[in-house]
Image (cartoon, rainbow, N blue to C red; front, side):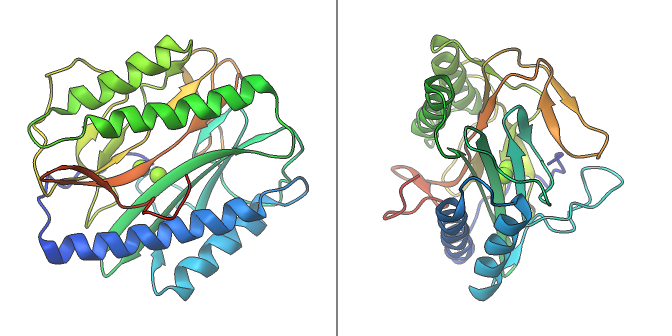
Length: 264
Ligand code: MG
Ligand code: MG
């Protein structure tokens, strides 16, 4: 989703509680979508599952009708991106095939506060190469989150993601980045998946960030398709994406969109 910034905000305890609730609903939507991923299912069916979970839990999908990305509002509850599609795939009648990798991005709003999270999963039997990419992408997010401490800087996060990704032979997407989050889906600061340690905005307690590495097997260059949303790798090689919304606490990051008891 294209960035729209609303300044860097420090959340109150009440606001954090709402974001925790939004995060839990996002986790539940992720869980139900993941359980339903199999060859033959359409991305539209998975989108309905996510929307049902979010609405039944009293929240509103963050992405549906989102119009800041361009002239065409987004029509899905999830972004459904397959194989070389990096982010922002539009759910619809396309079926998942055995051997695909599938990236799901989903957001939910509780009383005006957003949660935003993504994961990539294999469909049926996938290649070792594809599984290795997925595992490295999740791991790169964890390394980024480890750096998200009060007193550190945004560049520490991106540097940790980039160092690990590149050590595994992958490139990190530059054009699309993580972000602050709260009353708006995209707030300041931007959280790139690359950078230099000790550089960038100072991280403070009460900040809430969405960290979201996108790792590619080939080039980091991207192309946007004519549908106005779907972003693919320029060389059509595979891409994976993981994202969590976190809150900065006195002792490190609290992961809001993958709370305890959820496994990805
Ligand atoms: Mg997202
Ligand atoms: Mg995001």
